[in-house]
Length: 417
Image (cartoon, rainbow, N blue to C red; front, side, top):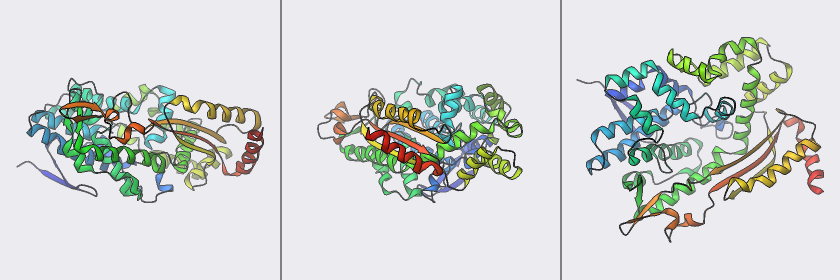
């Protein structure tokens, strides 16, 4: 008899793991996700936000099964497609770097690797994971094609990566649960049970419009209250600045060097030790560097500030809805001019954060089925999404605590003129 494992999830209850799903979860590279937090540094604002990508990926697989099983029973996809989409849901976060979105912008900036690239590299080259997939006759290339939205099936692509995919359907309520932020609650089961195939991927019937709108508004509020909270973002930037500094020290560089280039990361994956690159490794290096006194006084001060919640303060915090990245240009240019002309501080003592975060994908909006035809959610007359700007725009100026008063005084002088 095939062994079955049940994992109790705080959102979905018991999640059943058999066969390929059980064996994927048992691999070292998947167990690593227990040591990658879902919301790095959110615990500095919401102490309960200590959940991991391990629980999130299991939850995504659970929702994928809910949707895919129904689509299979209705004849839209095959039984093999159900297994494939569940595998992809399990693996969609498999490559995330330590501290996830804290360090990934640095990796993208320096080496051009996005989180999706890391996922593809792990799925394609991790030997233990490849052995499991091969054992059950699941093609690596097929998995990668769905994960990267290159599959010939628009339905499978959209279930894994779209505005209303199984990833978002899990992380919004999960993150709301662990932070205690009520804004992230969505009508999960109504959306999951009413998602339906369309000509280009997946759509929702008109009767699910309220649930879809609520989903989008929850996402918008979670961006402001959690994902881009000024304190959380400040600590993510601080860690990026510290991580860059660590490479200057031989003892630390020897440990990190394997994960500091595309070639090094690929080698680590192929040799089966990518699983060691986790939050604990980075945190351990920071603690070790402090205890051994191997950092410069400036770098030691930054690490101490990170570990003891004495990091960046936002002296400018401008958050607004906008229609494009272009709306950020004026304010960000002013702040750059201010830093250059009025402040003698240089990074990492000061940091400018500018971003336009999409609330929805304007290029590929969710379709709504109305009277037998398909319309984008923005073309449905009764939809409030017609009036919601496409981006949340953030413009922030961060400084270390000891410089707050100095910079605030200079800001008053600069903008008075």
